[in-house]
Length: 161
Image (tube, rainbow, N blue to C red; front, side):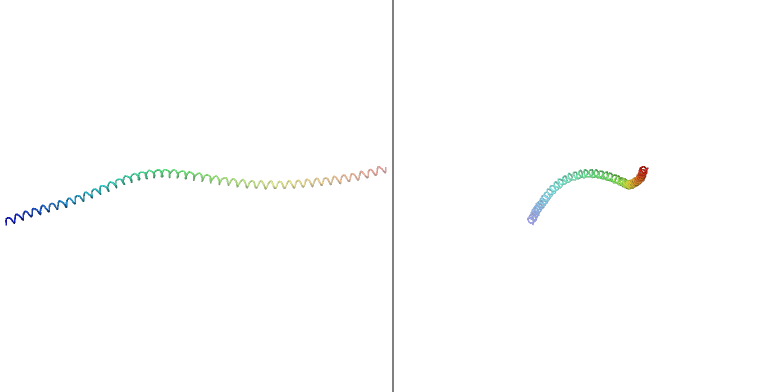
């Protein structure tokens, strides 16, 4: 019985050692698995950090470009507003010029009408003067004819005398 117990204890020891070895192998396998996972996580983290640094660089560049575009946008906005003001002023001046032009055109039209009226009056005056001259010529002709008749009568009287 003592031999059996020793054998039993020996078997238990061997099983315990075997079990410990198996546990040790399981733990080693688990550690190896964890090491592999840790290595993959480390590589993944390094890739992520690399991508992060690239993204940070791109973000900084995008921010810089955004600032440049905003500055350019503000400048163009101010230029556009200034251009709009200048255009509005020009439109107002054009409106004033149009009003002046209308006034000048109406004055010019009125003056042209007055000149035309004066020209017609001058023509009428010229016609009347011409008529008066013709009438004076006719009167002078009649006077001359009367004088000529008197002269002929006087000449006839002289001859008779």
